[in-house]
Image (cartoon, rainbow, N blue to C red; front, side, top):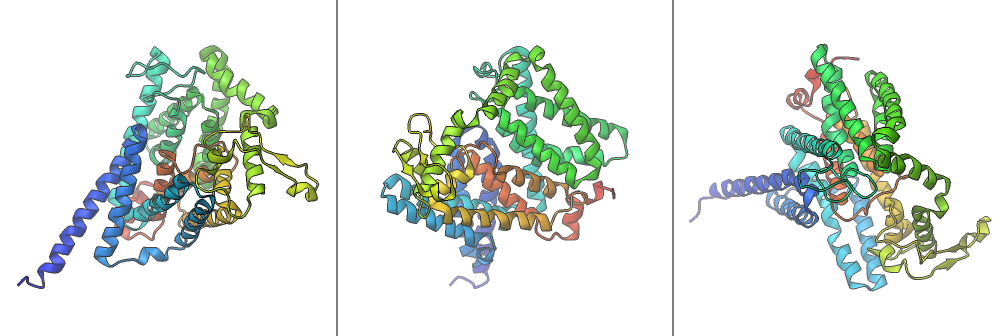
Length: 438
C-alpha cells in the first residue's frame, strides 16, 4: 500500500514539473512572437492548460476572484453569444478559444511571474531581443540588407530581423519593459560611465525607431516617454533633449533617408489632413456603421472581416443631428478595423466594449496603486507599456491574433504580477537598492 506521505510528495513533484514547463514556455514566448505566429498560439494554449492543471492539482483557485477576471469572463461570454447568434462556425470556434488569452494573463499574474527572479529573467530575454532587433535594423540601414539578405520594405521602412515591416511595433514592445529600466537605472547612478551608457542606449533606441519609419510606433513611443517624464522628474530633462534631438533627426531625414521622410512625414501629414478619405478613415467609418447597426450583440468573432463587404445603412444617429451612415464596401474592408476598440465593439457590441473597458480599468488601477518608479522601475515601465497598448487613438493590428495578442496579455499579466505587494528580499531585487531618492 502506498504510504500517505508519498501522495503529497508526488503531487509536489508534479506541481514543480508543471511550473518548470510553464516557465519554459513563457521564456520561449518572446522568441516565438518574433518568428512564428502558430507556435506562439500553441505555447500560449499550453501555458493556459498547464495553469488550469496546476490550479486543480494544488486546489488553489483563488486567482478566479481577481477583480479583472469578472469583466473578462463577461466579455468572453458576450463574444460567444454574438458568434452563436451570427451562426458562423469559424466565429464561435474562435470564441470558444478566446479565454486562453485571458488565462495567459492570469497565469503570469498568479503563477509564473509571481517570482521576482523569473520576472528579471524574462526582462533579460527581452533585452537581448531588443539589441538583436536594433543591430539588425542598423545593419539593414548601413548595408542595405539584414542578415537574411532582405532589403527594407518597398516604402523604405526598415524591417530589421523580419521579412515584413513590423520592426517598429516589435521595438515598441521591447522598449519600455526591457530598455527603459536599464536607462533609468543609469540615470540614477552617481557614476559618470553608467550615466553616459544610459544616455547612449536611449539615443540609440529612439534613433532606431525614427529610422525604422513606422508612424504609429513613433507616436506611441513619444507618448510613452512623455508618461515616463511625468512620473519621474529626473527623466524630464533627458525627455526634453530627446524631443529636440528627435525633431532634428526628422528634419534631417530628407538627406539621410528620403524614403523614410516620405513615409514618416509627408504621407503621415497627408493622411491627417485628409483623414476621412484615407484608408484608415474608410475602415473606421465602416466599423462605426457596423456598430451602430448592431449595437447590442455585434457581429461575432472576425465580424468585421466577415461582414465588411455587406452594404450597411443606418439612420440611427440622425436624431442627434448627424448624417446617415453608410459602410464603404469598396475600400473600407480589411481583416480588421485597425483599432482595438472598434474591433471589440464590432465583435461583441457595446456591452462587450463596456466589459472590456472595465477589465482594462482594473488593470490600470492595480498598476497605478503599486506605482513606485524609484523603488520599482520595472513595474513602472510595465505600467507605461500597458498604457501605450490600450491608448485608444491609434492604428493597431488585430487584437486577438498573434503576435499582438501575445504581447498584450503577457504584459498585462506581468504588470499585475509586478504590482503585487513584494517582500523585502524581492524589494531589493526589484531595484530598490539601485535607486536613491530624487
